[in-house]
Structures are given as structure tokens and as C-alpha cells.
Length: 313
Image (tube, rainbow, N blue to C red):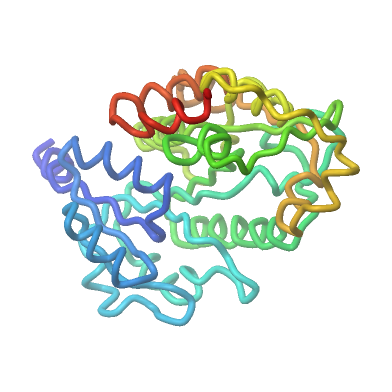
């Protein structure tokens, strides 16, 4: 019991990639007394993270962690959000052996529901076949397999989280409406799944409390929805007229290759496992609840107080 208490007092999260999802989880755990460490790709962000109390290290494909054993020392949990590239998974390629030697209670690998590919609107759960339709998603399939294999070979508690489209404060349809850059695309029957960044952190914490090494979880809300409906609701929250719907065939003429790849897949994603196994209750079970919460958080922070007035005129 004394040893377990000692481990709890020394909890430390190491994040490979300190992006949107990692920051929210790290902030939560930091408030609970965890030590936080992680990687970023440039010196400016490293200084900003250090100013917030994060033990920050530079890392990317061309720049492995300096003094990696020192950087990873004391980690009890690891979150991996750094994406694979054409050469493979840079974290495993550079530091897989060092990670295998760590005494970790939990590893979370953040993947994407894009690994399922297009189902024509049919529902997929975690046991569905993986049929990715883009090179980016195929790399995710390979990275998932590599991390799960590392877990099996070395007895590591690896968990895979397949995330739907992530949104939250500073990264939502509300921001795009304010910038005047959003279009309302009409494609009947085409749905996207989403997840609020706070709910990602909730799922990760629930998994830490109930580790199940080798398990895969879909992380999405309860209501896949059409892009046009989300845009219209965001406009209604801001008190502005929604843009007229644009037929999908016309909209594609101005889409980037990246945007087209997102529209290539149409599927519903089942999230029952996070509820049944991890006892998760989503704070934002649909995009309406999520966008209301984003707007409320922004108003509490005093953000964009003048932007909405300008839009409503």
C-alpha cells in the first residue's frame, strides 16, 4: 500500500505531441498534482510550455529527443498524439526501445475514425474492418498496429483511441463563422461524427482509471450530423444569417485535396464501448450541446466580445 501511495504521489504524464487534445488532458491532470512533460516542434512553443510548468522537449522526425532517458524519466503515463509520416511512426522509430523499458501504468495512442474508411453511412464499431480510403488514414492503421504490437511484445498497457472530428474553444464552427470562411455544403445523407476536446480528456482519464491493455475505443459523440446543420446552428448561436446551402458537386470545385479527403468517407461511429466499459458520460453528447459550451466558455473568458456584435449588423 505504501508503494502504491508513493506511485500516486509521483504521477507524471509524458505527451509525444502537445497539441489540442494533449493540452486539455495535461491541464486536468496538472490540477490534480501530476507532473507534466512533453514534446513540441519549435523553440517558441517550448518556451511557452515551460512558462506553464511543462517540462518541454523538442522532437520530430528529424530531431529525436535529446537525452531521451532523462526526458522520459519518471513517466507513469504516456499520451501519443504525434502523427505518423510517410516513413512510419517517428516516436516508435526513434524511441520505441526506450519506451519499452519504462514502467508505465498507461499508454494512450490517439488515432482517428478515418481508419474505417467509407461505409456509405453504415455504423461501425471497434471490431469493424479497417478500410482506410486515404494515405493519411492508412498510415494511422499501420501506426495503431505498431503500438499494439509493442504493447504485446513488452507487456505495455497500450490503448488506442479512434477520435472523430475534434472541436472545442478556439477550434470550432463558431470560429469559422466569425472569420467568414465557412460554407454550408448540402450533401443529403452525408454525416460526420465529432467529439468535444473536453470529452476526449474525460475518456482518457476514465481509461487510466480502468486500464485494459490492447483495447481500442471509438471516441465520438452520440449524434453524427450533416455539416450544413452544424453551420446553421453555429450561425444561430452567433445571431447571424446562415450562408445559403451550396450543392456538394459545386463545392468540390473549390476544395483542397485535404478537404476532399474528409468528404470521401460517410459513416456512423458507435461509441457504446466508452460508456459500457469506461462508464463515461459525455458532457457534450451532440454538436448543439458542444457548441453552446464553447460559446459559454468564450464569453466567460471575454473572447470575441466585439466580433459577434459586428457579425449581427
